[in-house]
Image 1: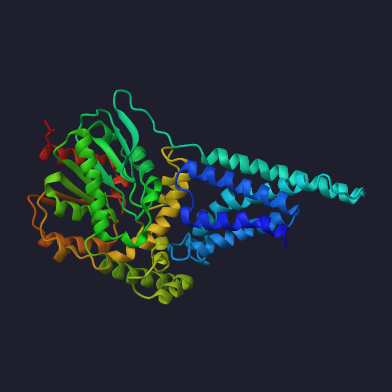
Image 2: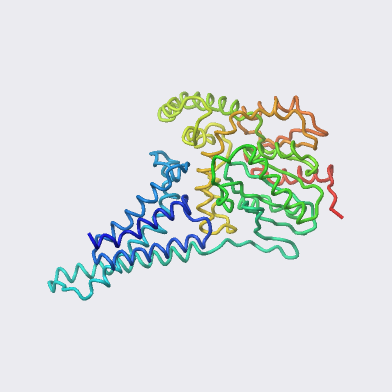
Length: 472
């Protein structure tokens, strides 16, 4: 019983970690701190109990305390695991990360702590016991090496590629992470808002639209909850449509002040167009022009038609598994990401929209440290779950009848037809100083990345038609 007191720090540390970082570490220093504290707690448990069972019990108590503490936090990475593709992904980037940074280091620490405490105790001199001790020491050394490598890897920050004579850096606007790149620091400023909730498009913007950097200072924003903005995810009850509008305005004010610009150019994609459109409606004086790519106008109406299309396609193709999944969840809107999962995972197959493996591709951006790469995936899952169900009442035909800036909508010819239909319905009633729809051939939902040269041409025309002056 007295020895069991040695496990108390593991219990306390589980509670503290659950309150401090319920979704895991935000910054590299957090990750290193969690790892080191877990090792220390494990060593204490092992030395105090002088028992090998502490190797198992200390991590278990930590995990149980953490799970109880996190009750009330929502999202796939902290909810109970689901036996689906997204559920497995959430388990890996959520609890799997904590296993590497806390449970494994604690177990290794307990193993060494117990070993040191037992050195003076009587040991069996049998050959079998000696072999067992040798195997145990080898396994402990291997796992200790894994812990050391893990600590070194998560401590490595992201890096930017320099632009000679220009600007290339990572910055923050409050808790929102930004990548800023341009051949000239005095060029007009363009803010890009990614599409997915918790979206990060650093890799795609630098790789596919680098030509924009010759004309603009291109600022790519990681949306709340994803990538370098992962630390802004909680509290999720405040993750609303109006909050997304405020986030765009916050970044806009930062850029206008920093680069001494009266107005900036705003480009948004897909779901990011909701907050961007509302920001333009709220404060048109801040923007020289607005470009909506894969513009959202009525997400619930679009999703319902997309659901019908997907169900019909699945039935005609004899895809019984997809038919079963779609009929189980019923028509959108849904309360969480798992309702949308079959639509998310099968959009390319139904529409040939060429979204591709964008989540993993953007996670490879060198501008993101290892921890940020994990946040790209974990942030999308938890942000989508928190935010997307709250866009169900968006209908720009009634909510945004007027925009007081020039407006350009860009769509691929392989865009989901329902989205184009709802955009056209809004476009027909929208009042703006200038409005037009540009359709890019051989392009899907991510048309600006499918046809980057054509998109750059559109942006240069937007700039020529709507010049923005610098602040004196």
